[in-house]
Length: 479
Image (cartoon, rainbow, N blue to C red; front, side, top):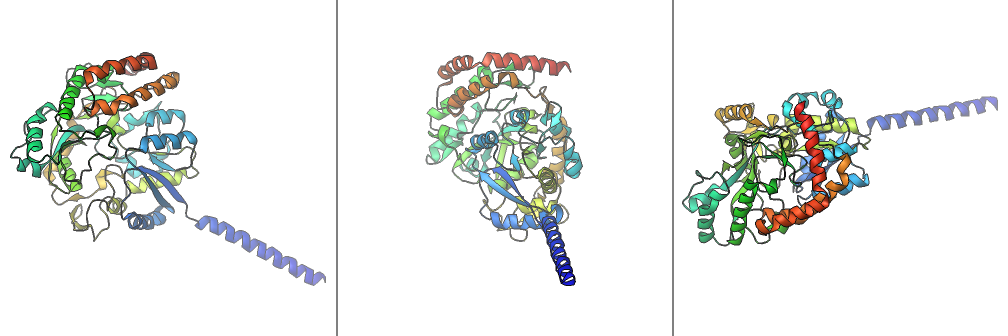
């Protein structure tokens, strides 16, 4: 009996040890799925793109990525709810970056980013780091795209040729008048100026919190850059808004523009001109033409500059409550340093959508079409995205020169600590939400509406926010 009992105990112990071993091995071999929130429309071939990407990620990072898309018009509102509710996620395209970082919503990446995504980190211009530090800490993984930018008016060249005109003399919104009029006359069923709910009139302003809140520094030539202003009270903005209003009344802008959350997609052929954020125009026009599927030509209407807005153009953040912070960071690092992975996402399936020519050029194939790839600007590092065969060495050299010559906003690196005026900022945001789309699309008369806006902003506590912001900005400039 002792022998039998002993044997049974040995067997039980052995089975128990085997079970523990299998459990440990299972944990070791389990592949976590990282959840990312992304802005925009889900690619039609999402499953194929992610299957290919996850083969690489499983091998390199021992993890999978799942991307959940939220539409352009809904992203800000839904991400605000997700952040405030503490909903579980791992990675997201940042929204309201500075405020949420100050709230502690995002993981501190100051030391982690150089350690776990060193290759991608080294590719970042210093302006990205400077423009994303909040209270001396880095909470963002900036996508290396156009470190400087200018706002442009981008034209469908086919329609310019059709109306027998060119955009050579377009340097402002006002200069658009003859082109819009001719296009409207010849093709009344199409929209001359493509705008929408998210369209914002562009000036050489660096917005302190976001383009949705009326606090900005003027970095145009001749401006002192030391005073924070309400851009809607500036004469340059008022002048532009009057022009946009006149275009709306003449039918050059869609009557439903203020409520149109989808806007006019780049790939559609039902508009003459749209506003785009672009870096160097040589490479920029080529990239824009590829993305649009038609020849595009652009004219700059703002000063090319390195700004906080541009540094934060596409920030990915990691949820401070994520259980997979390091893995999430490694995934972002891989996307931003692995050409095979990134190009498979932004161009689509190799062999179907594109093929490689030489070391750093590709040719687009018939399979490359709208909706079957991801956008480059909000996916990963532009330095490892292959150029198409139409991008010349001269264009790339011009991009380098333009980057060197871009001005630096005096506010680059200034991040406002809003902790003393949170309520007032919330109230200001509510007021702006009421007016901003109508004003920027020309739906309302700016001369009648801006005084109402200013009155409601004052009641919301705008002056208190401005006083605190200017005080902090003065200290920043002294440093």
